[in-house]
Amino acid sequence: MADALNNIKKLLAAILAPVQDLESAFQQLLIDRSIDTAVFAQLDAIGKIVGQERNGQVDDDYRRYIRARISANRSKGPVADVLKAADLIVYDDAAYYHAIQYGIAGLHLVVEDIIIDDYELIRALILLMRDTVAGGVRIVVETWPLAEADLFVFDDILGGVGVGKGWGDILTPADGGGLASAGA
Image (cartoon, rainbow, N blue to C red; front, side, top):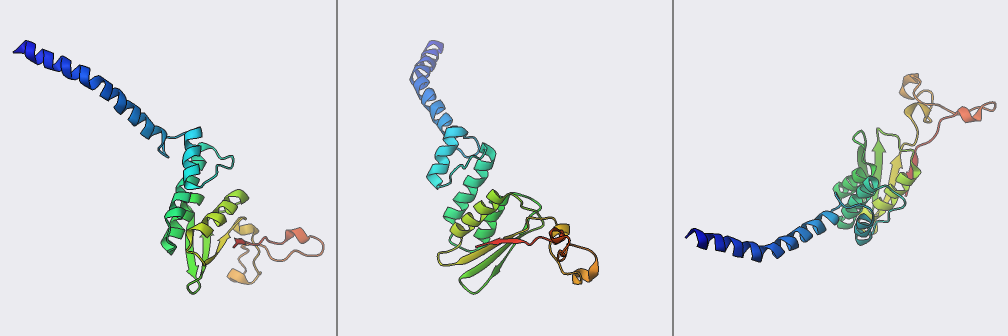
């Protein structure tokens, strides 16, 4: 009986050895084609499939952009999809997003509480938002490229507490505050 059991084990081991190699190959294929684990050329292939170019980004940043592109591709246009895609691309826990709808064909997305001074990120955000909203909807994306103390405000706003800068003058025109950026 022990010899028969031992022979069955040997037979199963001989039959299943090639199957184990096949399973290992499939497991490696899954690892190489996952957004979380793919690197270099494999990540480029995923980006090509979903329609997101690398644009010189390192793998970790490119993964964010791929996830955001997938979100945009799946979007049917509701505000929740726009906010989700914006959060994936900006990827900052301090950011606060709110959207203001104008009728059925206008949306104003405001990214607040953070400074976005990377114009490539702003450009990518605008382009992605255009793909996230429904067809025919105009979206305006508003960001803050400057710290609050450097923004333009009138002196009497906020009770004159000194937040922001007003107009420059003839002698020092550069002393005025900067404006928020918005892209459509």
